[in-house]
Length: 257
Image (cartoon, rainbow, N blue to C red; front, side):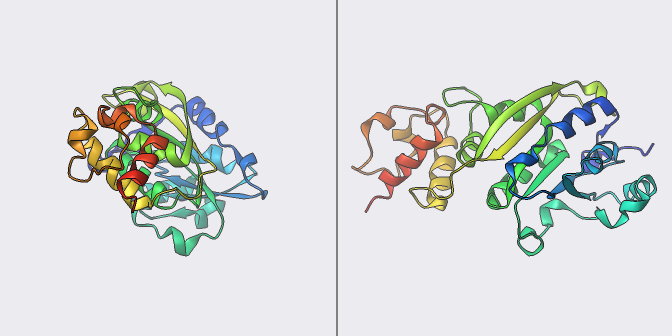
């Protein structure tokens, strides 16, 4: 057993039942072709990878940035060496490597999970589904509905383009070393939203600006960009009270010509 590296945020999964459960949450029926590409982010020593390779509906490639894990994976899966990639997903060029939508799965390092979600958003028309193990607090935040105090920027952005399902909580005891926090598994499935009624960059700008001062009413947090077109009903609300549809509507009003 390799020693986990703190600088990489490693917590190796050691419970096969949890890995089997995670793998079983992948939904290939959402695709209109039989063999679906699946990228695993952070294979570690391959305990989850084993169950992914067993799924005959998946064409699995697994990414790992720890050079010490690569020979472990190659020894564990000698007939899958070409599927084991010494790569960082955050620098991986999706546009050049994929022509069909695919699935992402993985036990994500807590310290880069937000960066991974923003990359998912950047390539939302290719990333059809995600099944991720992440920090429980982050999973709850992403799945939280409007009106909840933990609802935030990632909640709005991801819920705009994905159906979010909080699947199950996971004890620290299934990891080595055990993390200091609880974990959870979450599934994102691409919804029907292809384009927004407003410009996407402006939508992102309005949401970020509003949540940068989340305790303030929108008449104050968005003061510099408001105009007479904005519906009064939004002005006395805090950002956590707006659904993603409300934010789209608000963005249209702010930038209406």
